[in-house]
Structure formats: structure tokens, C-alpha cells
Image (cartoon, rainbow, N blue to C red; front, side):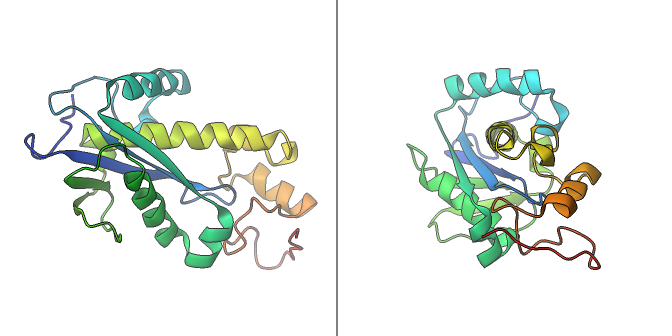
Length: 201
């Protein structure tokens, strides 16, 4: 089972984001502070859990965490500042929304920048190595998936109830047939260059 902190005597928050590679929808980040001695076999990389198990673990994380928060950064901002900066912004916002501010951040990935006055450690594949980051990945993925399934009701031809905005063949065919929506990221390559796009206002 994964340890929750690098330093058990320091209040650390795990941070992760979901949705960087999507063509549509927000990038979503979460930040979680778990008790230093907390262990759970199913706190691990969200991609390794079934949807049913993730939903159960969301309730477990909310009930157990010292503090947790989720943040969304919408496509219009992604297009303005680019997806990498939007990911950093989403994680920074999630930390800022925590009910208790941590002393240190554990970031999934190899780089991070923020205007928060908090030290941080980047951990490559952190959601497979640290329980706090893994818990954040579970929250971020669950919240984002539920959001994409909700907006699917208004745009059913894109298949967001199953692909949740990722660039599947079905998603690209729908963009070609129906054109992109305001949920799509205009700065992303939605279709091959030879296919023209008419963006919705």
C-alpha cells in the first residue's frame, strides 16, 4: 500500500490533474491531504480502478481526508494560456480551495509552476507511488468524467458519455460531421489539417 507523505511530520497535499489530452471539456485537478498514517489498498492510480471502484473510493477519500478540493479550468482558458499552464492553474486553484493549507505539495509529473507560496516536490508517475497523489487522481477523474457525461446530454453525437472528450475515432468523425462546440479546445488539432472546421460561436 502506498504511503501518503514523503515526510510524515509535514502536512503534505497530493495534487493531480486529468484531461490534458482531451479535445473537449475542462482540465480538472484535485488536491488531497490525507492523514500521515492512512493506508488503503485501493488508493492508487485512478486508471487502474474500475468506475465502480473509483466511485466507492471517492466517498472513502472524502470521509477520510483532512482536506480535499477540486478545480476546473475551462476550454476558453486552456486556449488562452495553453494546456500545460492550464494544468498548473487547475492544481494551484485546487490547493487554494483546501480548507487547510498544506506545508508542502506533492505534484504528479516532472514540472510545476505556481504563484502559491508553498514548496513542492514533483514525482514522475506519482499517482502510482504516493497515496495522496493517487487520491487526487481519483477525485479529478471522477469529477471530470461525471461532468463530461452531463454535457453529453446536450451533444450526444460526440460520445462524451464513453470517450469523455478524448480523441477517439468516433469523436473525430462527429467533429467532422457536426463541427466543434464551445466545449472543444480551439487551440487543439481537432481534425487532420486537410479537413476544414467552422467553430461555433
